[in-house]
Amino acid sequence: MTKAWESKLNIALSELLCQMGIASRAEVIYKGRQDVLIYHQGLAVVLESSYSKQDAEADAKKRIEQLSADLAIAVHYPEDFQQDLREGEIKERLKHATMLAKPIVPEDFSETLFETLGTGVARTPDNWLTVDLNGLVELIREVGLFVISEEAVKKTEVAVGNLVDEFVTNLSQHNESASIAQNLHLWLNTTWGILTVLANRTETLGGWIRLKQSQWRLLPVLDVTRLSERRLLKLAEVFHQFRNKELPRIPEQFGTDGKVSQHRLELDSAFLRALGIRASEDDLRVLYGEVGSALTQWLGATFKKAPKVTKQQEEQLELTE
Image (cartoon, rainbow, N blue to C red):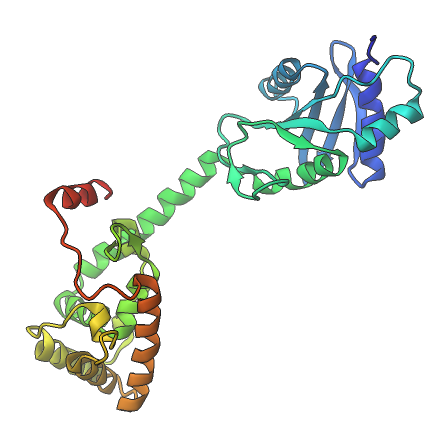
């Protein structure tokens, strides 16, 4: 069967896209063939369409290399468009056709496009997507939203890293750095500090968790620099009062074994008093009940004894840092 010229299909596809709200036109970009050019969200997007997947992808990559488009989408037409089809018949077939599409992005873009027709998860455009006309329109509409220059991401990462490093350096050189460290240590051992750590955890082996250096850097903590000297002195007293007291495992502190740890109750009560916050023992026990219930759901009912971590497992944990 003699197939209809690809330019003929491209013109029909461009007109259909315009009808569906995608501003596009068919124009000669390369070797006299009319391709579909789209201006969408400030980007120039070229649809390189062909009966051959290899040709469509190669031409799409060429558009990027020649800088004639910001993005390209290779489109593989099915082969059931015979040459004698009229314009209206081609449009009708395109409306119901199943095609393959593959976004092509510059090399400095990565993991920035997502499959709108499947999982909706951002991914590198390595595979061909099966689309109909509606799916192709959706892909065109979304493709620009998920394009981020790798260079821009790296610059932002460096800027944020420098800001965090500057804060850490200034804090370490503060004339009250020892006091600040003590108070942060106290905060992290309160129920609210523990919940913050658990919320940012990385699970490793069963009930064992770990926070990587980057997670510690971004962990929300009590801003002790805004506390009055009187409050800081009271917190220091609480720190020294409990610094040598040994607390049971975290699940047991919150009554998952049927009894709330007295040290947990005393520590949190003293911490709140130092900050001038009123909370009754009953209020804290209600909180502990909620925390204990959540821990039971997370860890399961059988966690009375912590699993022993072998030397090999410890080494594996170190390697994940």
